[in-house]
Length: 172
Image 1 (cartoon, helix red, strand yellow):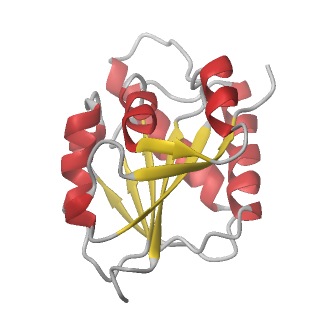
Image 2 (cartoon, helix red, strand yellow; image 1 turned 135 degrees about the horizontal axis):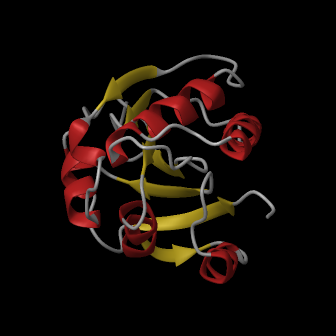
């Protein structure tokens, strides 16, 4: 694939987690989270983006979100469970994305706040329609996602390089 063809980065925050007596890394999804993860999967499938790669945090709530969301996809992308996504800053998430092979066109990253929201804010040098306003108004609640597009190699992912194409969050 040419590095001049648009690439997409979709940032998905894990769905609502429960608070049982376990470590933060092992927190499972709450009932509402399971419903919202499935809905997020439907909405992601509706974008029509053919994901080549999913990068998912190793935390229980992100793995459960991904398992429920991907069930709604017409085709399952290759999935990499990446420890560095857990508690990652936007800069650390950019470092993970920079390692993506250039034959990959579209990546879905399933992670946590504040890193995911921070990354969406940092990458979006521009936005289409009212996507930025909706994201600013809603924040990045559990199960929300942002769709960003950029042109170039994955090694060129840096602040301001992308256009925010879409944003979705479940209704509270």
